[in-house]
Length: 407
Ligand code: ASP
Ligand code: MG
Image (cartoon, rainbow, N blue to C red; front, side, top):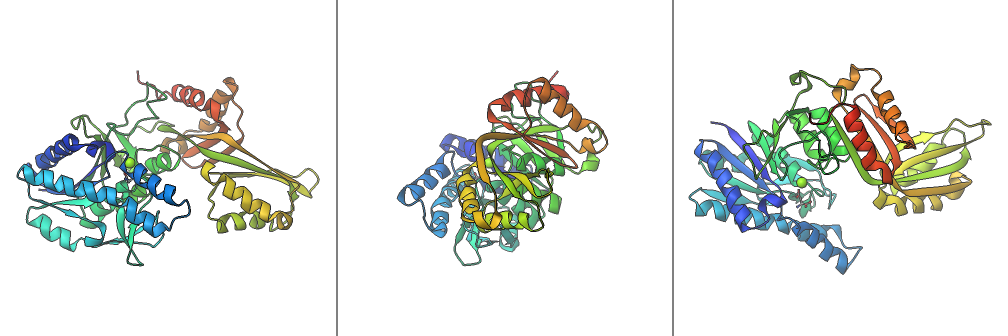
């Protein structure tokens, strides 16, 4: 007998028929003798609707009330799935974040899980009752409902699995696993049988939308065996997240991710002296703007230089505002920005052992006439910033160049 956590995303619980289907998948595991906790998302489209309503009433709404509203989607599906399970003779009850409790920080709208008490759930699981957990939500240190940021029910599921010390966490979604890249752009993309935690972490944070980044961090930290598989074809293989050592054949590149949520800011003729980076990035941090890639040029005369960095497109206006407010302290000549850029990244633990991987990327892009605006690297990834109109071309060309195309 094992203890397993099953997670179902929005499309998997989009209507009552699908909820019935999910109930049958849960029953199958119960009938195999497993203890089962299920984490659910809101019905597809529901969270967007709730977010929209809140914004429509007031763009500057209180984030605590936003959480009260958007957490409601998961409350509904948790209750409905418990009802559907009981209707087919499976003992089940719903659990809201505060009932478990799932304790989080008070950063409303993007709270972090601080602890999950497994005691009450474990008692019920031992009695053979299925725990249906409302994903995405918790109770904050200010004693109010919190949510974990968009896509956060993945994180709920993996964190529940870690707290329950589950044998595995199965993430059921509308695709049958993690692909080498987005199959909507590259029809020849292949499903990966296994992917290392580190690679998945890069894939998720660099734009692949299969799993929330934070869920992968937790899986990696607590060594939770996570599988991504399809609700609609649950016998198809899926993808297993595992330790690097468990991957035998390490290709130089495992996957290609892209993100269109990028914008570039360039400050020209800033003083080339100690402390100038702090005068630029300090105000951005204070304004809550996340800076991603940064390049500073070597100055020609030793006195003035140029600096380029990227932020997410939704934060461009706030970033420019923070820069312009500090114009005299920074001392730049002019500032320009470009919201039509995108980031393409190649990822693979095999990169450590294969020299020349980045060079292939640069060559392929140049052959396609694509200009690279900014580059950033880590041990297992290379990212480039390019004009957004070339994203699809770049991803396709790289996918072939690294021999990732389905034969
Ligand atoms: N329902 C939430 C969202 O749409 C959480 C999730 O689905 O993971 O972001
Ligand atoms: Mg999701």
